[in-house]
Amino acid sequence: IDIANLAIFLSSPQADLITGQDVHCDGGW
Image 1 (cartoon, one colour):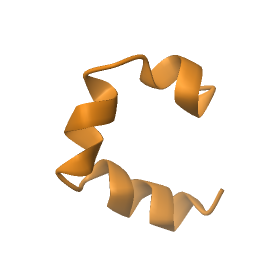
Image 2: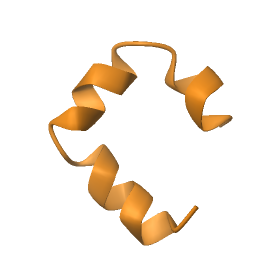
Image 3: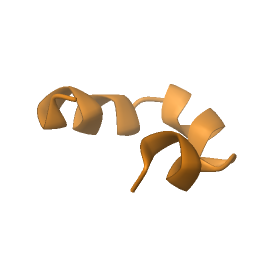
């Protein structure tokens, strides 16, 4: 995973849908 692209994605509105779920399971962080 490209960290730069990941940061851009996390700053996008779509990130709210994921952070509202289980991002730790999906992202593995």
